[in-house]
Length: 194
Image (cartoon, rainbow, N blue to C red; front, side, top):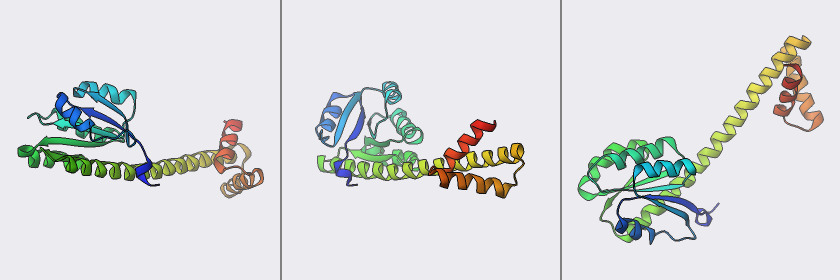
């Protein structure tokens, strides 16, 4: 899928209206919507409890670690991409602290072109994360199926005194005969014999 067609939800965390408005002007509605604006980390955490955001843009131009900590939390606990804006003179120091957590950083001041380019990187990163999320979900589904089939086999072995290979064949044959997944057959066996 061409990620240019996708719309990304955005959370802007900044206590200055100048930063928020200049950044908002670089977020076209056809690509970034909704755009939620909050003024501090506590409000950002509340907003992230209410909904998932694809992108979290954080004004870290103050000389404290709260913005960096928030960015690290976003990348560690959520399926969001964090872009942390920092003062140019603090860039190397902050970058060294946050990069291992997957936080993208951008020094300020930066040109609108540079910010737009960074937003493109953010979108590309979010798309890559989506692919990993799908893979992880597929692996979780497969693991659930394996656990359920194993549990059903052991119930067949215990209750009906089948051998393990007979129980395995039984589940596979039921799935083929009924045109359903092995997971569905296993759940039926579990519900019947537990």
